[in-house]
Image (cartoon, rainbow, N blue to C red; front, side, top):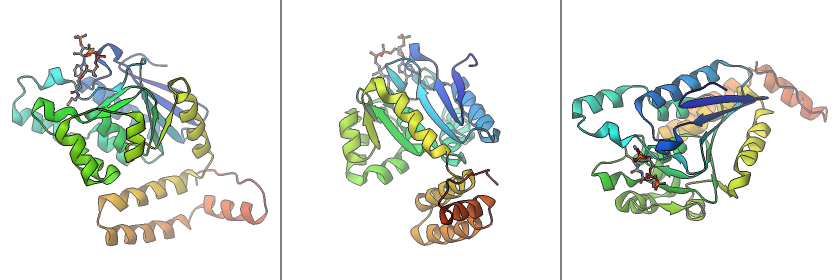
Length: 259
Ligand code: COA
């Protein structure tokens, strides 16, 4: 495991990325954001890694948001420059392999936005989630105004955004902000088991599927359906497709190679 504000650990086909600033509740400062982008870039290029889990160090926070200390005194033009960089949110959204957020505590602001940019969210029963930007007199800048209503519907999104209130894991599950809640002690084992299961599937099909599903929320329905049709056709060009179909017909387990 490397040292720094972002740790990477690979177990079999699954990599775990840990945001490691527990004394600041894993708040995202510029260096940590850059390290997340660089780490995901490395994992994208590592063919041995087929699924990724992201979590926070310690037992208090997943990510407590952007580092608010960096906001102080920052001019609009400087903040605009930050917003123009390739972001951790884009990095997760465009990451061509499955990425699971294991939410182990406070998941606020940019932390909640990062979790929403991941594919699947599993929360510890102790987690607290919210978009408290309104309490700082700002709005979410990591995609929260777009991804939150898509996940939880307009009314629930407005309630969270307008009030800045935190909700517990059970409420987050009820409204669809997280997909599963488990006892805190079981969080990483559950995330690992799910990631390992996904990692046995065809990497080609997984990444095409992710692209198609992402298109469903990126673009209007008609455009998404067209994109899905194109990617479905492309999936038929892979060896994994031939192997998957042949294995099913032969009643054996497929051996996917990613080609
Ligand atoms: N940015 C910068 N520093 C943060 C931070 C953030 N988003 N969240 C927590 N910290 C820092 C605190 O300033 C404190 O630093 P210090 O020890 O140097 O004083 C340290 O992390 C511990 O935070 P503390 O508030 O003492 O811990 P807590 O467990 O009582 O509360 C939170 C945790 C997450 C509820 C609380 O820190 C908080 O509300 N953070 C801000 C959340 C937020 O508004 N995020 C959206 C940003 S856009």
